[in-house]
Amino acid sequence: HSSRTNPALPQTKYTVSISVADDDEPTNPVTLTREITVENARPVLEPLFLKDVHQNPIAVIDENETVEMDIQYSDAGLSDSHRIIVDWGDGSEANEFSLPAGSTNLSGLTHQYIDNGPGGLPYTIMVKIADQDMPAGTVVTQTISLRVNNAPPVASPISLFVRDSVGAWQPAAS
Image (tube, rainbow, N blue to C red; front, side):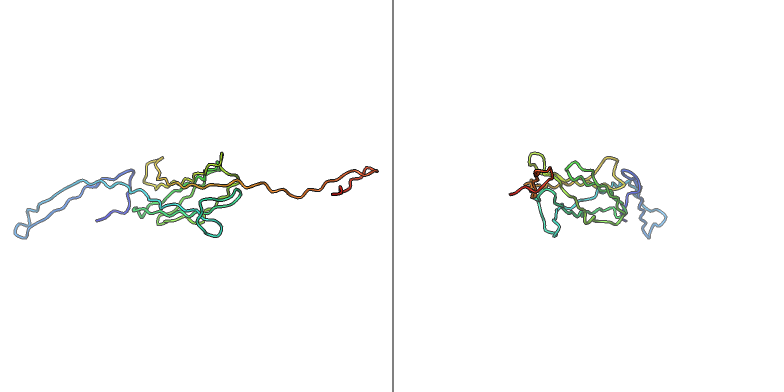
């Protein structure tokens, strides 16, 4: 027998009895009884990878660019639903997702990094996953780093105006 889900938190105890009878003594079976404990199998996160808008793997972007991430995971508890939290590491609000039983991935997550990391340090992106059988506050965590380069400022052409002899604004001669 196998149990693919753990119906109670955080573990479930079952009593299993096996009786064996010999055909010579069918009224005197030998019975063995044991208590077994089924503990929740935690979900497993696959390694994280970041992609650019062209689906190329990346570890470095320039500020104001966007990254994409797919999250792959597995869980021996096939009836488990999952909650995934993505903290992009830049102080923005974390994204939270609830996935039904049978799901094994979360695809197409995107995030734009407006500024480079403080002091030029990389951002640490943290993904947390939990199934409904895990105790509150317990998660499985995976991280990945992303360096965001400071992009040089871009100067736009400017126009200078001066007042003419009657006080009207006129473009200045270059």
